[in-house]
Amino acid sequence: MEFDPEMLQQLGLKALFALLMVGAVMTMAGYSVLAERKVSAWMQGRVGPNRTVLPFVEHIPLIGPFLKGLGIFQPLADGLKFLFKEEIVPGHVNKVYYYMAPLVALVPALTTMTVLPFGEYFDEAGNSSPLILANLEVGILFIFAVSSLGVYGIVLAGWSSNSKYPFLGGIRSSAQMISYELAMGLSLLPIFLWVSVPGSEDSALSLVGIVNSQNDGAWLILVQPLSALIFLVALFAETNRLPFDMPESETDLVGGFHTEYGSFKFGIFFVAEYAHIVVGSAIFTTIFLGGWHFLPWIADPWPATWIGTLLGIGWFLAKTVCLIFFFIWIRWTIPRFRYDQVMNLGWTKLLPLALINLIVYVLLVTWLDQPPSATP
Amino acid sequence: MAKTVVIERKPLSLSERTYLPQIVTGLKTTFSNMFKEKVTLQYPEEKPQLPQNYRGVPTLVKDPNGREKCVSCQLCEFVCPPKAIRITPGSVPEEEEDREHVEKAPQEFEINMLRCIYCGYCQEVCPEEAIFLLDEYSSSGYTREEMINNKAKLYELGGTLPDKHYKWDKKKDAEEEGNAH
Image (tube, rainbow over all chains, first blue to last red; front, side, top):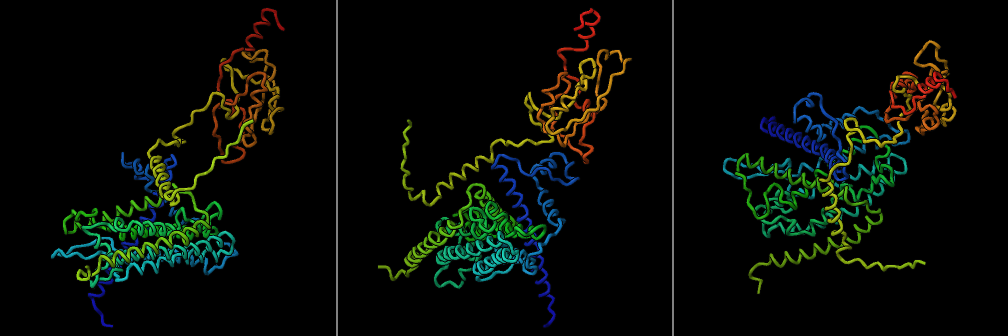
């Protein structure tokens, strides 16, 4: 291959962006853990972590105690604790898969974000192009394909731990994943039907296309509330969040799939779970909440310059953070479903509902899109 | 005889069967809880309000004249269920004028806080009202030896309590007036 400095530059830029994005998502995952602890504390009449502070920050007047009270430095302490704890590997595990499982859980969570658009920038002519690591035409398919790989991490962990509770957790996780994946995919089909314009060259499977279809118009959650609901419920199941946290239901499975894991390997599972939530919230924002666009039916109020780019990204992040809060809020509100109820809900309620939803929108879209000459 | 009334449970309506209205109600509850006053006590900075009859660490007290009240009768040692108290009895030197008529005093008085169960029997049984369970509740140490409170420590913890009787003063007065009982 010929040496091409321009390509090298491109590659470098991409790598830089990728690092930035991984950093952003990991930071958000770390701070969602803090948010989880804080919000749960507030909902239960407690104050949550408010002791950890860096030595020099403590002495800043006003700001120091405020940050300390918010527990801003708690994720740092948690991370360090995981890093420096003794690594215990039980003797009865299958070593190869035991070591592999946390990585298999983390990698898909971080891979899905490559196709996630999070903003747009404008060139001198005022044309906008999306901020995205890899603008795939079939972005949403890629997300579906990769994000369901995350379950392999859990199944592997459950199986390789060679112990009963992780094993049950792994089984539950795979069963749950199968039952909710279908409803999840079906709930998004009406979205594609709705977004794709007949005869258009653009792929309706592109996340950028979906976001831009919501510019200046209704958000898709308003157009298709049922799809949004099914997708959200399936997202909860997919991210193993309460009320569907079957794989690690503490009360009946000790710790579920990560019972035999400790120190940093457990930390990776933990971060992977929260990275899943962050990415899941971002996907929901992209598809149903208009991405980086302002409110429904209101054009973006920010100028088409770099200021607009930053405000758009900020707005996108704000929506994502609200959704993360919603995830946490639900967790501390609803008790866990029983395992058979989860299966029941998935197969006999959500799946038929998603099918009906699809058929209704197929008919509706067909009726709306028929050529004017065909109408009597 | 009370009559049991069996109330028929109404079949759930469609909206109830979707769970959604109930979930929204639950969400409202948890959200409003977020802004309520916190019940947590910030412990080392804020101390709890102890009730009057709180049973904390057992201590030895002195009377307002600064005299040792314990006469080492060893009743507390005898009654102590976990055998946490150990007393080495000693005598009071004759020349100590402010302790006239007191025959005995503990030479050493040890309470093992690793054994103590804070039952308060020692306080209850003490005829001299010399041992009290006061409001000190946090005792900690790095070694087992540190957790055994000796006499000096016990008096340091107990301090002085008001005395209703001034037993030794009465005894002295009685002897001077020739009315010893």
